[in-house]
Image 1: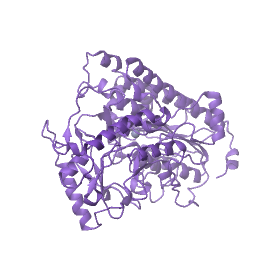
Image 2: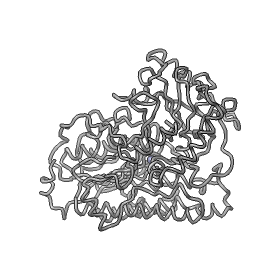
Image 3: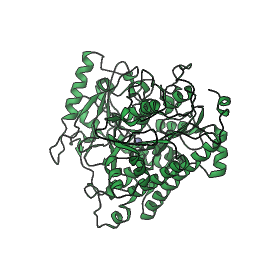
Image 4: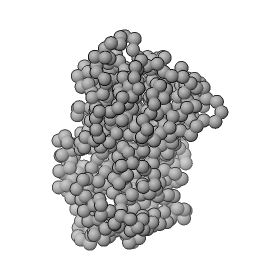
Length: 580
Ligand SMILES: [Zn+2]
């Protein structure tokens, strides 16, 4: 719909009637603990007017997959974002970073659907929405944007004007990779709060000038603080320095402080829009990194499913470590920030890009260990890779079985327990046109004791691929909190039912269909999520005059890689160093 139609409504009286507020990574265990202690009064107020329940995330429960599934109510087989990385188009075993441009469903996400129903939307900091779309309303992209200066908002002029008034917008906290002292850590916590308050400030100022009917806003400090501070509030964490330690005592409440701060931001939004219905959701939960590390490519090599290229050996590894320090020296702070921001643990991931060479002609399956939070296995498919060895059909199924048996058979040398409880076949868990672009096996690292990915090398082939990290966590380098599948869903407001009795099992993909239904709109047929009818007590009158009109745009994949010079500089260096 046109901006002209919009102007027919008086901007002075038009407020968002529905707020969808994301707390990235907010987890039931901590939320319930802080609620019980009376620390989250705004959340409590919503629950008192509605309901709270766990919210099951996607498989895998990672930001890059989960928020796109939220936005469209669809599984990843339809939106195409399975991870922060995806194989390049040339089949040459190189991986590109994903961003919103890779999403195939941008013409059918909640912003597009509401626009087609005549409603304006504000969409702030949702991961995987870069580059921003020219929606009716406004959009500020999330963590897949290279930096604040790369055209992250629409309308750009409005965003510029608002920043002149309110202050410079920050996508997120950049000070996490460098937390060496207690002062650094205190600075990081203060920065979390500053960045999130500024997000609310800018959003409210945008709405003042560009009224919207619905607002979607994601706060991500919750996720980041959990990744970096979990071991300082959990005495059972293997890397906890001890409850008596000065570090523990100084930062025991770091995560709590951030939840409390997000509660204050929530209170500001509820005060600004007291009539609005509100849903708060997280894209996944969190818990301790409590298991061992696994060198997955070494495990595959030991099972005869991967063959190292037999060249250079020690010299190569010496070169790789020189390359690591060269990379650290030569990437500018800005480039490092752009990379490190993409995933927690980004810094160590960059260092692990020095993958030793693999003999692809003798390899059945491999793991991209360079830049991924979520361990998954790629079969060396003939249909996808230049030197593929695995045919579709029964050969494919056999190869899957061999990999599953090798990896789920790995035992923790300390406890004798199974390390990887389950490997999901992507063809079983995803449905849609894009399933062939998914990694073949998603390893379950979020149930049970969890595991994290170590860096494989031929020199480790004679050792157990499962091992425990030595020494205490290095702040700012080691991730001590990691995702779990259950996040949270809180709903409250004038059109939301008061919780009573058994609540429906809720999935992240159900939130948008439920939001549409609250607005009196019918979710499109190809949406996978369901309407959580026990949440809805009445229809929100947001002034729309029409059902969702059919889209007149086609498949919206912009196929836009990071085309800016930053990305080119990084790629050139990495290729030059033999990283890719
Ligand atoms: Zn997340």
